[in-house]
Image 1 (cartoon, helix red, strand yellow):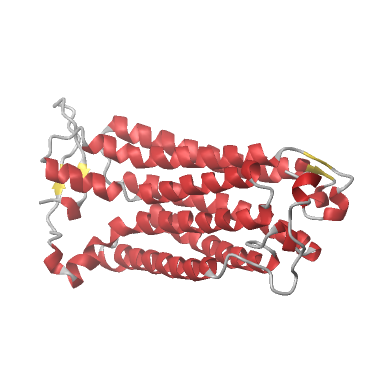
Image 2 (cartoon, rainbow, N blue to C red; image 1 turned 120 degrees about the horizontal axis):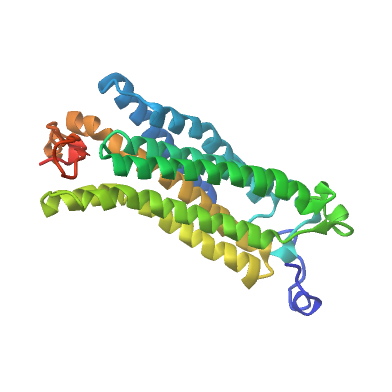
Length: 321
């Protein structure tokens, strides 16, 4: 959204010597969150390989997400060196090309990470969902996530972006942009973020719905719900990101200032998704090093039985009384 002349007339004079910026909080929080994510995934892998000896596709897919997570963290931090978090009137023209190229690459990385994390979570559900109906719902969601991820990558970023500006270099080259034809990036980006949030919420709701259909004590249902609701933290971060994205596209002309918060909350969202997806796998470590927390090693397994019309499910060990 290009600012009209009357808006630009109200801007202060450019300050290229000591411009105002949004500070180092993105760098600080991104490093802390990345360290937590790597620690959680590493601990998860240790438990599954060396303690439980039950590593599966959900673990390997989460491992595959880590290199992309590290890369996007580095690139987003690099973006702050090219004007992310600076007012548009203090924005240097030489920042435009590297800034837009970083933005393009980070969008592809974000889609890849979220697709892998969603798949890892859904595959982990297959470890304890035994009812055919619930497993069918879960596999349907896996198919939707694959369609969402491949669709976003192929259409939104590899097809639409190659058609977004004609010629393509106009997407990051302001010189070519003056004579180029570009489509509406705002609506495309917002539709992507909204569908991402919807799939996140559906993934959280799948196990919660099944838990409350079981004939279990309320305490156990609450524990199960609380565990699976950890993913709502990532959903909240995603909702906050949608707010800042909408404000950047439709509520402000100061795009370089607003984009800082968008990418800040993207990093929060993807790291929380990785952390929350890995936390439930760490029960054996908790049992070994923090036994007083009361997580017992007993296991309740309500298996499927064709001769009984009951709801059956395998209950994760760390939530049993």
